[in-house]
View 1 (tube, rainbow, N blue to C red):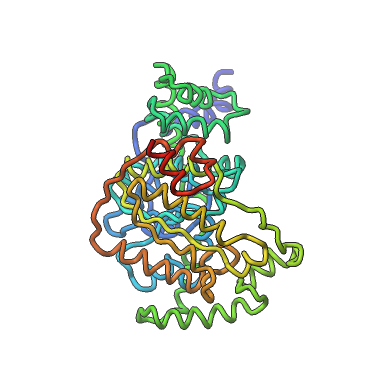
View 2 (cartoon, rainbow, N blue to C red):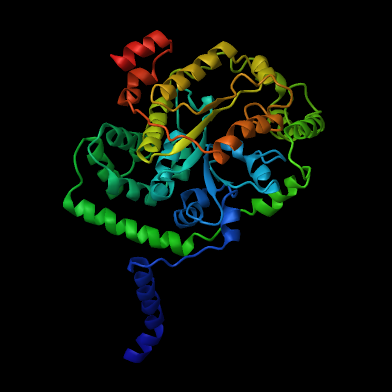
Length: 429
C-alpha cells in the first residue's frame, strides 16, 4: 500500500518540494539575453511593467545604456520618428526603456519604480507628464490595479517609514485598491497610513513574502513579451535616411503625415480617426470638452510622490509636457487658456523644487503634423521631443539639487485654482 501511495503522490510531493526550494532559496535563477532586453524595452505590456528582474538586468547592462522613459500611452505611437526608432536607426549611445502605456499615471509609476530603485540611483531618466491626467478623478482604480503588483507593494512596505510622503502614499494605495481588501497587505498599508510602524511579525512576513515574490518573478518573467522590436521598431526605421538630419527628417515627416492624415481636417492619423472617432461620430464630439479643466486633481499629490522619489534616488530627470491637438481642442471646446493655466500649475510645482529641466511643448499643438491624434505626439512632434531629449542624454549634465516641499502633497494644493500669488501664499507660508 505504501509503495502504491508513493507512486501516486510521490511525484506531486517531489514537485511541491522542488518548487518550495526554488521559491525560498536565496539564489537568482534567471538571466536574460540582450535580445530579451531589446524586446522588453519596447514591449509596452503589463508583464514587463510589473516585472523586476528583467528591468534590473537591462538597466544595469554595461554594454547597452538603457534609459527609463516614464510616461503613458504616447509610447505606443511608434511611427518612424518615435524615440526608440531614432535611437536604433542612428546607433545612439542609449536606448529608451519604455515604461508606461494607457493608464500609467504618476501613482502607478511611483509604485512601479519601487522594484528597481538601486538601478535608478544617480541615473538619468525622461518623464512625460500629460496634463490630461489632472482631471477631478486622477488615477483610475481599475488602471492602477491592472499595473500594480504585490512585489511593488512588498518592496515599498519594506522601506516605508512614518513620514508625510509614506503616509500619503499608503492613503492613496488604500483609496485606489484597499477599500475592499481584507488581506495582510492592506492591513500593513493601513498601519503606515495611520503613522504606525509595522509589527515585528509583519516585518518578518513582508520580507518573507518579498523573497518568494522575487523568485516567482525570476522564474516566470520571460513570458508574454511583445515583439514590438522586430515588428514595429525595425520596420519603421526602414523609412528613415541613413544620414541623420533634422531638416531632412522634418520634410519626410511632413510627407508621411500628409498621407497618413488625409481623411480628416484635424491632422489626426487616418487609422486613429477611423477606429476611435468615426465610430462615435465626429458631430457628437463637438463641444464635449467645453467644461474640461485640469486645475483640481489628486494627480498633483501623486505627482509629488514621484518627484520625491526622483529626488531621493538622485535621478537627473528631464520632464516633457506635450500639447493637445489645437484643431481638435477648438472643435471639442477645450479652452487653450484653461489648458495653459494647468501647465503653469504643473511647472510651478516642478520649478519650486528645482526640477528645472522641463521641455515644454504645450504651445506647439497648432504646428503642422506635430500631433498624431487628439493628444499624442507624432511625426514632427517626436522630432521636437528628440531635439530636447537627445542632447540631455548625450552631453554632460550638471546634477540638480532638488528641494522637496511636502506642502505639494496637501489637499489645498490639489484643489487650488491656480494663480502664482495664491500658490506662493500656500506653498511658502
